[in-house]
Length: 476
Image (tube, rainbow, N blue to C red; front, side, top):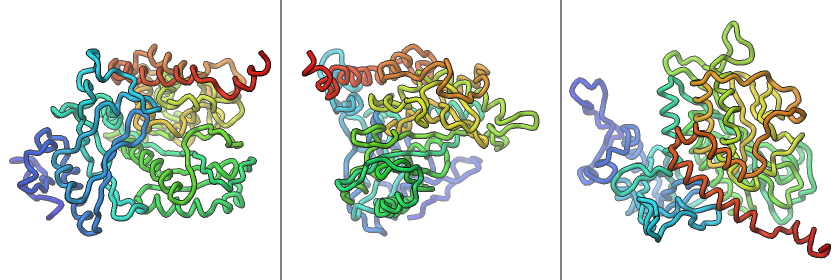
């Protein structure tokens, strides 16, 4: 079957219909509700050919939940065509859980939210453009999904869709967003020596060369835009960088790369974690540095590059930066969504603790360099769709209000600047108090996310820690 059905879109439509559909495919859930673009129909045809030619027997259909963790089902080859017509179902309660897997919002009571009562189903709608063949699982494919209710309406808590909605707003303002990713993580084994280390130490990297080799092979065979694998501090801390690309695609790449790294490490006798500051790691905490820039949709011009009478960055970049700083406390709920991530905000640690920007200054929250902005406040466990969406929401408000970021700092840890939130609870309070996010995401979404994260933080506060036991058990 051809990937392009060369029929006019409409009389005088000026294009071609890329919808290669068999008669049996017509009228399915996806077709009926118009959920795929022409490009996705073409990708679906390509996906079918790959499944046949490679001889895949299983395909994983996955979606990213509110924490950026993948959930889904694995279908046999014979079941894939039906899923490509109608999607597949999963319990809606997956979207109501905190990081422990406990449902936080009501499900089986009269006050359950519409669409989620009784843990009724949501529909996973595969995006064939995201399809890949897994290099480490025999005869297995992988495809990301969006979420819809059974009546075809959007699920408001689908974070992949939330990002695309914010990028549509950005497009209406005349811009496309490019994102570059630097993602740090820890890899542990029973024989690892974790006594500390040197930054970018070549011999240290050679000691973990087996990890570097199987990660490089796996990630590149997964068609992910791997740029580098670097040793950070010590034998257990690595960083990968990805080639810059379109924002929505970059979020997919981070979702896939984190899951891939964890699976590849587990299959090779290691444990990889994107927890920012795990116990037993004597090295620096890990972060996620998000590089962002805009391109003018009409002219194609790099919108952050300074003009003839500008220095360091354009006025567009300054206003976008002003928005990032103005909404940084609220955005922290998305850039640093775990209790553990706030233990990274330490002075003189290459991680920011204040809301400041600097010219090529790695201690500042936002580093300005080479026509792009690098937000250094994120943790590697952040949901990539929400992290990037929070930047769009903040930046668009900066553009709309002409916000000025003020002068750059040369002392990012020695000023009286506004502090980043010191805990997840404080970040959620800041989110609830910032109307810009409620306007952009909707009050329903902010309330949903805040409730889940408040419950997570409350469980943390109620836990009796090892520190408390050591400090008080014998003393009092």
